[in-house]
Length: 187
Ligand code: F6R
Ligand code: ZN
Image 1 (spheres, rainbow, N blue to C red):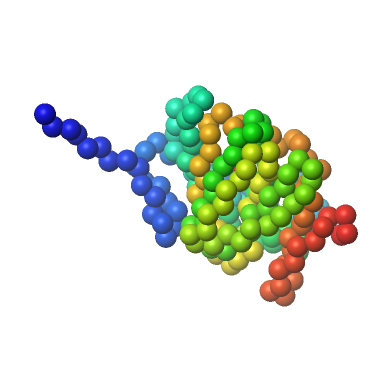
Image 2: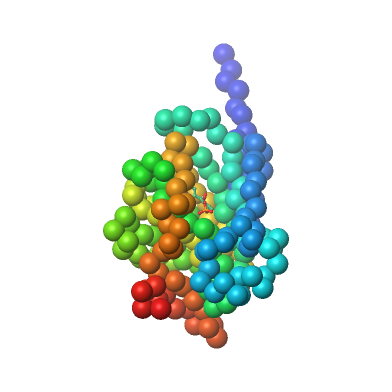
């Protein structure tokens, strides 16, 4: 009896590009990120069709116990003094966690619990980030090249963007090469 060996999809660890598998791609542009950046005038000055991040996901079966694998490619840039970042979300099913792995570039993972307590983890190639349940998450590109991060999460998790419509408790800015994280209440 012989067993056939199939070729799974693969990911190039230098670039974060998937090959093989059924890849679904979504581009998020500056115009899609209404209310995300603090400086409205600076946000409006950037052409709405400017890509901020792309997410490539491998198509997965749906249902309890199934997992998605996705790669976020977050471009470098600033809106006013605030670095480009993802919208950020809680999972709709709050108890569901996620794992992120840094692939290329450098940035931060902003984590915030339901009590509004926020913290930051450094993202760099090879970094491993365990996002517990009940924790909102957002990637921030503080570098000069694309920040790519691989994510694995349950297909049942879903996304809740609305609970963060008022923003996260920390804002990360850059000025003359210096990265600063400020509590939003303290400006
Ligand atoms: C999935 C996940 C990532 C993000 C991606 C884009 O649960 O955390 O794949 O979806 O980084 O960020 P959002 O969804 O906040 O626009
Ligand atoms: Zn998530």
